[in-house]
Image (cartoon, rainbow, N blue to C red; front, side, top):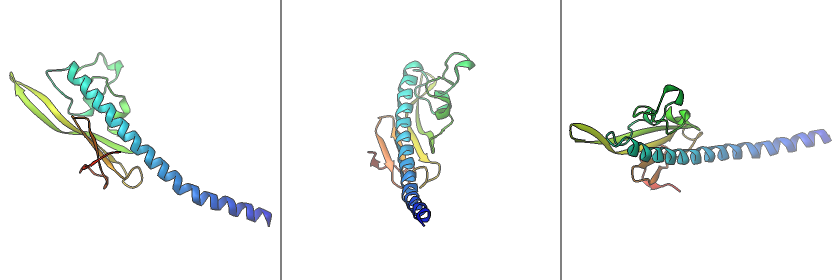
Length: 153
């Protein structure tokens, strides 16, 4: 009888803890997405300084790259880690979009961009999508997409 009571208590505790663990994981994934957006934005600033004729990178692979592949270049600047350069990290999908280009001296230069982070599995890996423009302000889409209208907190 005592054993049944102990098992019942353990089951009740598990039923309470499992949903809480999922919420904690989702919150951690969202925080990781925000930090990753900040990392990409910092890499974009460095990229723009290092490659002024190119401007900003218009894809994550240009910000990534491996040291074993040779010295940094405009196509592999080695400014973000390999996992983030793939565009998938901690349950979120990252992308650089809305690249605005200007032409001067017969050379195209990227002058602005938008970084997006959307949950790979909405509702499970995160509820909100995030966007950051070249101005550095992070906005959120409560529906989990890229229609970011709310300042992220």
